[in-house]
Structure formats: C-alpha cells, structure tokens
Image 1 (cartoon, rainbow, N blue to C red):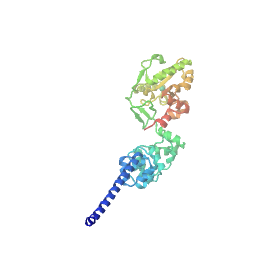
Image 2: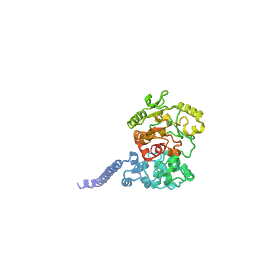
Image 3: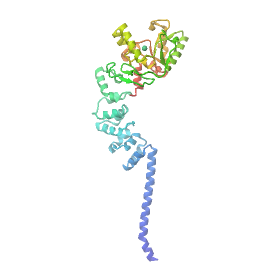
Image 4: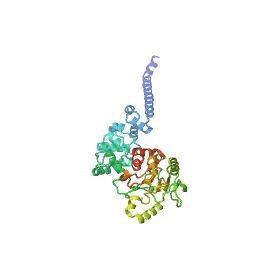
Amino acid sequence: MKKKLKLKAPYMKVVKILGVLFVLIVAFFIFLTSEKNSLRKLGYSKKAISSIVSKWQIGKVKEIGENKTVNAAFESEYYQQKNLEIYEKVEYQKQKDIIKNINTLVKRGYSSKQISMILAHGNNEDVTLFAKRKKVKYLEQFFSISYAKLRNYDRYVSYYDKEREDDETTVLRVNMDFDKEDYTDYIEISNPSDTVLVNKHRMLTEDYVPKNLKEVKEEYIKFPDGKMELEQKTLSAFIVMMQAAEKDGKHILINSGYRSYKDQVEVQQEYLQAYGQNYVDNYVSKPGFSEHQTGFSIDVASRDTSIFVESDEYDWMMENAYLYGFILRYPKSKEEITGYKCEAWHYRYVGKEIAKYIHEHNITYDEYYMMFLDKD
Ligand SMILES: [Zn+2]
C-alpha cells in the first residue's frame, strides 16, 4: 500500500497543476467572453473588439463607453495608441479615411474640437485634401457656421479680405458664388428636386423637362395664346390661392408658366430685339438659367390692371402668397442677392413650410437654399 501511494504522489501533483491551469484557462475565457459581450453591447464591431483585445485596451474602452470614432479607430489599420484620447473626443463622421485623416490633422496641430469641425464640414475627399495642407488660421471663424464648406475655405478667406463682411455673410455669399462672375463656372443640374435652386450660377440642362407638367386652363390665363403648362403641385396651389384671392375680391391670373429651354431662347431673342441688350441682361434669364424651366414658377397678373405693381392683386400677393406656398422670387430690396432687378410678378412655388420661413425672415430663396438645402 505504502509503495503504491508513493508512486502516485508526483502523478497527482501534475494532475492537480493541470487541473488548476485548466480551471484558470476556462475562467479566463469565460471572463474574456463576458468582456467581449459588454463591448458588443456598447456598440463595438467584431473587428474592433478583436483589435481592442489584442491591444489590451478592454478596460480603457469600457471606460470610454459607446463611441463610434473609437470603434472606427480600432477597426482601422491606422490606429495609433497615442491618439486614443483624441479619437474619443472627435465627433464621428461616416468617412472612409476618418482615422487616417484624424492622425494627420493631429500632426498638423489641430485640437480634437477643431478636428471635429473640419470633419463635419466636408466629405471624405474634402477632408483628405484639407489634411494635406499646413494648419490654417480662422478655422473657428468660418466653421462655427453650420453651412460653411471645407472646400470653400480659401474663397472665404479671400472674400473676407476683399469685402470685409461679417463671417456669416462671407460664408453665405461665397456659397452663393458671389465671388464668381454670373454665368461662368456654373453648376449644371440634370435631375432637379422640388426644391431646386436655379440662378445665374446654377442652370438646368437643355434636355430637362419636368415630369409632372399639367396644362393650365384658359380661364386662369391673362392672355390665352397656345398651350401653357405648370408642374402639377404648383398649378393646384395656384388654383387654391386664386380662389382665396377671389373671396377677397382680387382677381389673379397667370401670364407665364413653364418655359422650355427652347422657349427661353425665343424669349431672349424677342426681348433683345424689342428692348436691347441692357434690358435682356437685367430681366431675361439665359436659356437654362430661367426658373421657368423648373415648372415651379409663375408670372402673375391682375385681371383688371395692366401694371401689376399698381394693382390690389400685387398687395394681396405680397401679404398672402406665402400662405399658399409661393414666394416673391426677386424682391426689390434683394436685387444684389438674387442678381435680378425686382420682378413684382414672378413667384416661385416652394411649399408652405419653406415659404413661411422665407416670408417671416425676409430672406431670398438663394439664401434659404444655401443655409438649409445645399447638400453638395
Ligand atoms: Zn418670371
């Protein structure tokens, strides 16, 4: 018996050690699985988690908590341990090279707050280009304005130097291409939305025809002469507005609606012959640059008065048009902004919500578009 026990002792020791080891390993894996689960619950991806584990950053990341930029950092091959605190503070943007660009911007000397600003005002390509340049001045000045664009930075600086306008005006006007000549370096729009902005810097392509054109009945037209069409929502809104005006004893009619690119070529030639180049430059849009090609524009008229600004209908429209989704597109006080001499008769359908905002804030559609709708 004694002999047997003696023989067994070292063997038992090994078993015991192995047993303890096994328990430890199992415990470690259980622990790791639960840590991974808690990271997953915080929104970290499988790829990020395996990188977090291999870099021994579980504790730190749990402390940080849910954070999309940190997740992207651990997913990225460009992860740098020394920048973890920056990743934590930089606001996430869905950009392919976000981590690579953050690293470069840190090297350029930008703070996490400034980096957030840079990322928020451009797309991946804009940020990548911007990161290539030396640190710039006046960053906060322009990019605390929500609609400032990273790619316009140099234009803001030179416009500001030249015009000495305030920051908001500078950003807005450069976005509106105030620093460019009319009809040069313009944007061509082939697939416009209902809120499309057409002006001397943004044109519709020659072949663009609105999809929902509807013929305007003769009874709504001041001088019926051939077919007139309008985009269907615009026409419906006009009829509602016209009927409301009738109730107030005002008689509103339409002088002009949708005009094709080709129509505009003809209009331009007619006016050129009748009134000369100066008139054409101030009042007649070049083909493609006319808002009438959108189908959302109407030139209104008074049934009984030939000069519209002298009619009661003019006053009624100024007070009430926005309630039906129409805005005066080229007001007297905004000639510098719209680039057009006042056209008291030219209304644009933009829908009630936008029309109300523009009416209440006394701004132009060019400005509204740049502040709220421009996603280029
Ligand atoms: Zn017009």
